[in-house]
Length: 302
Ligand code: AMP
Ligand code: MN
Ligand code: MN
Ligand code: MN
Image 1 (tube, rainbow, N blue to C red):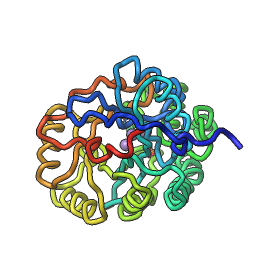
Image 2 (image 1 turned 30 degrees about the vertical axis):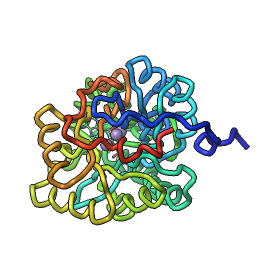
Image 3 (image 1 turned 180 degrees about the vertical axis):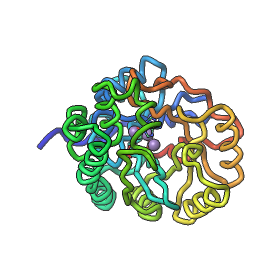
Image 4 (image 1 turned 30 degrees about the horizontal axis):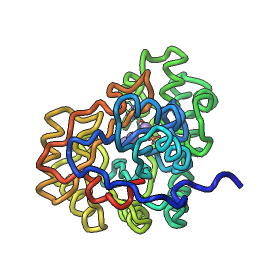
């Protein structure tokens, strides 16, 4: 048995987190437990030195890094929320739902995430076969060299292999030319349903949040359906300020948050010092009129 998970450790009461939109909260990033390149400890150190006060590690479909992240946050003097980013299929596209502040021991959540991860190995083999058809050989084995968690092989690992082997100059070029819909190496995949992802998070005591809504390219009708169905299932938040939103997009989704009565989240979506445009803790503040997700999660913050 390893150390007792720190979300179970009895704790002296800590002060309630400040309920203000100017808090330096970074509630979205990735470690080697999914498709980031830093360990949970290195991320915590980087977040702390960039001034983050409230942090969450949100690995894709995986919570295996939570105990390490929570312990590292405590060692760095940061407050912490448990986190994950669940892959969901909705209206023919992949949507990401961030969960924060859940009980990481919850059995249904753990089983749901394991099931969501389940198809990734087979998908990766098919991606490799697809790339071989355009002359790129050995992509499965090549991508595996970048994988930190054998259950979590992702397109990002293939992208790193294509850069390493000189096919593309950076990962952005990889996604533009390969691995996205209609391009070689893209394999459609069925992820969790929106209902299941939101239910796993909320039934485990957490808050479900629509990640980076500007990235999906939905029509207005599809986006309306996403927001209304998400709320009907119990979803409560939307990312407004994220590493992948422009200032204009942040303004748009601040308006959507108010229109739909959703709390607002803030997170860099940091993956790697070499790949991420926005560093941990360096985002603009949330617009002041919004309810920050950390206000709704005050009792779940460690
Ligand atoms: P997967 O879960 O295997 O489908 O991989 C999704 C991951 O690929 C995302 O979480 C991002 O890290 C990365 N990704 C997706 N699209 C892009 C893009 N256009 N540019 C850079 N990274 C991307
Ligand atoms: Mn990612
Ligand atoms: Mn995402
Ligand atoms: Mn992410």
